[in-house]
Image (tube, rainbow, N blue to C red; front, side):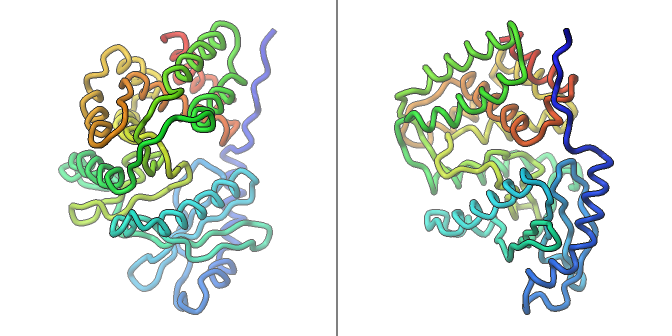
Length: 331
């Protein structure tokens, strides 16, 4: 008997309807959220996206000072509310100092015509996909340098308590476990038990972690990093080095390789990432986690997060095969 998979709740047709509904309500939202200082601002074009949050440029003269984000779904609202909370916490953290200039600010939030809107400052620059090839090659080194400074400013050392292990292992494993069966579920359970044992009681370096630190979320302007955006997955006490893994893995993914094959390749030979991940961990006090453990933790958090944020991943047999089942069979 074939097992039923969840039906995706957000597809192309739903996306077009959602975007049109957001576009109709956006001018009123911009006027309400922008306030007096937004006089002369006008709604620009939408950004392409696959989620159920629509993003529009805000224009003023020949520049774009802000972004307007809108969602009509419960999950989209939770994600935007989380982003608002994280941005506020980052700007209230005195340890960041001038580094906070790389973080957007929330300018206004509110409900308009049944949609939840967030007006957010727009930082200068563009992500690597829009840069000339010579400049694109410099993004990874600059992104690593920017991340190292964030770690240096916010780094602490703490024991891995049960709540942290739950957040890093048990909760994402539960999301994956719900959509796999048989030997794949057995492999997942064994992996989760191994990671729990590896983390429990360890004294590890912790710092602000972005959670989705990849080239599309690192903005570059005039040869320097000018912003780090999309902080929805961030946490103030993440594992030092985890964002490094995400950055390097997504360099391959953005070049056209799926997460699953990259993970299995680097588990077999972690030399392409081992040195830089270890260097980030060794930059201060705290025990060092094996790079393979870091790779597996990052994979589990990524796929678990995708499955919790949208039903379309579990409903996609190709994505599930390449990024979940193949990995569980391979480990």
